Image (cartoon, rainbow, N blue to C red; front, top):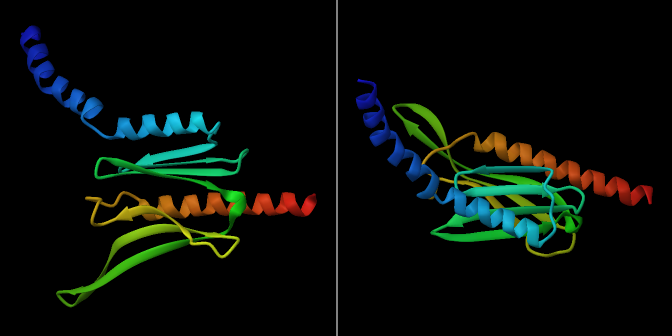
Length: 163
């Protein structure tokens, strides 16, 4: 009886676990992130991975690293925070009226890093309804990263003033 149970559970669970471990792009993204961090001598103080995206901040080197898997290609950005003046949270909300009730739906959520010079802003996508199948606390996540980046910018400005 125990043998039959073990065979049935193994037949169901093993393919599922193998699919999660090897069929997912999460491992590809994570490996790329670690490789790039090593190449650029980054030691992240905080990292987070979700929905084919990963982000990390190295406060010692003042670098923010972001990578996203888009159509089997990894798009990445290494941002020197010493060149950034401020950070904004851009929300694209669609308001719809359904059965007389107004409902707002998040369509896109992006962190915008504004450079000190007049260069183009750097956009880090946290949620896109055309790519992501579901929301998973993206607003909370983006707000936390905005706060972390602002704290790094404030610490940088305080160090410049003190020097």
